[in-house]
Length: 463
Image 1 (cartoon, rainbow, N blue to C red):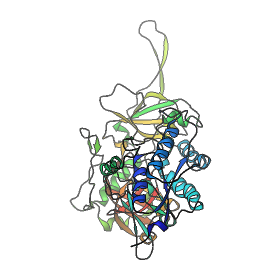
Image 2 (cartoon, one colour; image 1 turned 60 degrees about the vertical axis):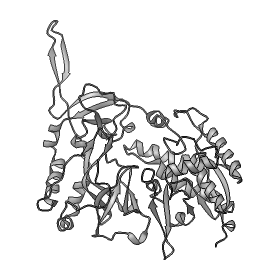
Image 3 (cartoon, rainbow, N blue to C red; image 1 turned 180 degrees about the vertical axis):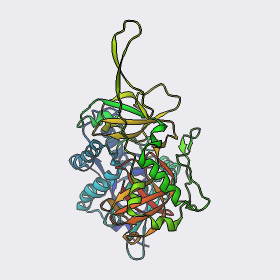
Image 4 (cartoon, rainbow, N blue to C red; image 1 turned 30 degrees about the vertical axis):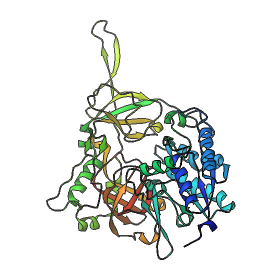
């Protein structure tokens, strides 16, 4: 039996129940454990929970460490967090992209800046309360697997970790479900046992995003333009994409062109579990030119021009100006900056008078326009294909890397908690294309696409 007492582990203790149980389990297993609480954010002007949330978290974390009987330390990483995570967020949003700060926080802070401090303090490993699993392969390399609890799997947030980072990482609760973690915390009488899960941006908290972004991004009013279905009948790119999709289908196969939605369940339906049969003909996929793949993966760029006309009012014959009706769209509202909106967004639009919900389907930061569409099945919400540039691809397992011209089937998700979707990955010169079996809702540039082989997370890339 190995002597765990010789292995020193630093637990990133946040004050939440997950990291508390991680620390407790390691202590029970005989490791030499110490806890460290990291402060990463000072400015609470935009948070929705007041300005002392981190202080409360630190207080709970310190009580947990005392209860378990392990040393407790504090480290301020706010400057590095601002430089590596928050500044990146501002830059991405300013370009009309939607970053994922939680993925960046894990790569740049928890398993980099924080890990560096922990190792200097003598730690052999850094442990966190993530619901995921780590496995060592015979060649000494490491892989990440989904957490055992499918409702709490957090592997997505670790999709950018390197082999070096994984070699020093431990995930003690990866084999447990959330109810089991709560039970262990209660039985151990940990002060965090009933603490609610944190929400919002990693280490910032729940925020009003426009208010948060306005700390650096200027508000500029612009038009909200609703795109009507008639637009797509005249858009060359959309028509060409439909033509290409038709040409790739297996004989007798068909696909829905917009995302299926089950409003009574409040979830997107999907094929979810194992890889199903692809509707696409593998030989036809292989014969696609790079130009055709680029066409398939290109998001629709909306260009709707509005003309004005003058008229006389019926009573006083006063000359007035109005926008002429356009069959492709209409101006339906105003916004405070296109950079504050993301594709698929429903809340905060202030657009009324519609029978169905209205969603953002596109933004243009140059013209400062926000484009919206009515209904869950609006064509602008759905896409089949996305592209990841080679410099933005990260293979967690380098041995799984696709070579140029290679195609392989994986399950993919484009946001946290999205059911895994069956897709074909196609590697071409400098670009990885992901073609899904079914249309995907709200694909947003700047987000991370993550691909799995069974329960193994193999790689990720920035859309």
